[in-house]
Image 1: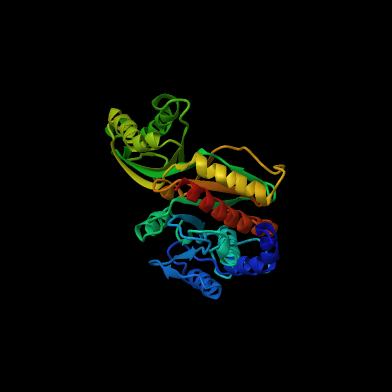
Image 2: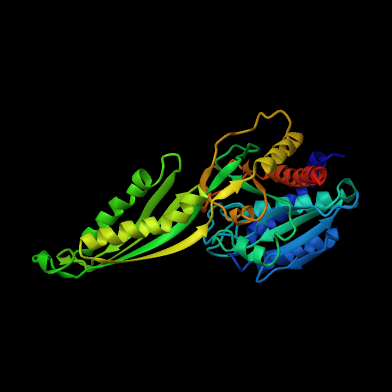
Length: 390
């Protein structure tokens, strides 16, 4: 029986698992029930595991085909979002204000399916398959947390899946090189001097300074970085002033930067702060810039992507469902693993009529068996390729 057939046979079980996770979503670093459910499955499959702090789980499955020190890492994120579910599904979230609106419940079920398959194929591979069930991807903390607790230790290659509602069901995409954006959040506080609107010269207008800063920030895109190194700068929030006849003495702006190059990502804080402080100073305001570096650029390895592409073609022959969309502007903290080991990232179509992070997002569950098969096939193929390199 091949991996595709095994995954198809598991589809009813994957549906049960996914719907259970979906009905009981938990926010980042609070995934205690989810972790417990994953541990229960590992115990049934007799796969040794250890819990990570405060949540999450790492399990190592050793093949019996022969001796090998090679290790392939498979990762699924397990956290949900602070979103009120509006799908009306019979297995909708039972936790008010929390929903698996990004599809991490599907990733978790897929990886558990792969663990089931590989536990029955131990005699087909040599080496270790490491299953990493990672918390807190949505807040950009989980990957580093797991790496600090040994998730990447002794691993030779890694792979993760993310469901994409904007893709048709079963469509797939793999992008070598930059595959997802680094995501930085920033807060800018501008301090001027309030005064009566009839006497603006007596004050220092923070609103005007904020408007000038907002415009100048776009020069990061057009003048600070090369056209071949795309950068996206968004100011999503700007608050200033209290009344229509008072010159505001304070403005607060919040926004984000997205980039795809490690070199550009490293330069962004200094460039943004220079533009903000010097623009503000020209208008007699003081400026304070705070950065939250959520995710690094996700850089995928050419060889890992080649192995993954061939694995996908074994599971889904013909290639008729391939896409070539290139890098995603969204962030993905699996990037942290890519700084430790060669990685590949698979985008899998989930055919949702509503966008991800929406309270109405609803994925096509028939792709659960696809994901389980891709995880498992990649693990077997990558271990074989790594063994040949030894």
